[in-house]
Image (cartoon, rainbow, N blue to C red; front, side, top):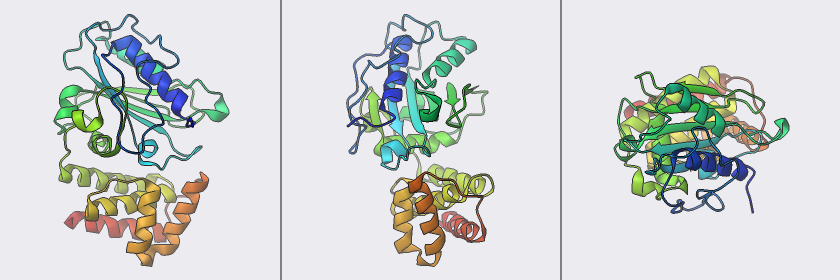
Length: 287
């Protein structure tokens, strides 16, 4: 059965393969995959830059986040993709504006406004994938932050890097699905546990003040599960686990789970949500 996001994933993979060139299709993902890899085909193959890189500049395209972890919710979740390119890529896309155009072409959804799926795409070099480490350099990020956003946000690395890549790489290695290229664990190196914990803490601190309560609470739950078990799971799986491990937060966790499953957004975190997040932040400090 085709998942709602599969045509968009195929479009992105095909666009990247056409523009950058890539040897071979998908080697397959981890268990619980994407319902069939996109290989090198897919819709919308004529990406920016044309012609390809000749030497196979595209190393891999990987699904991570909720779609790979089994927690994707229509109308709520976005499509998270990690793209790995060769370190010595030499083609017409060296200019900043060409990288921007390729990224913009990739995340342009083919669907109607009401079915548009938000996308978060990160492109990195192979060397970072193989040896994940600060300062987490990237080539380009492209994001459509809301379902109705027409013009994606495209950002080039200014040298500061992006610590979010620690989590992207960790999830890709543990549970990612290969849409193109080798299996995730064959390419992506192990991310240091301290780096993962640091980024989980940073996300929680941001989320409690800037995101809705379901996001903040369920992120806290899955962060706690990672700290205690080493497992990276979806928001829903983290929340279900926390019901057993932290019964004192039962009410707020159940409310967050209900909102996540129904694809609705709550207001910002209330007192109960903030209390849970703070408890988890305290635990992460000593994890």
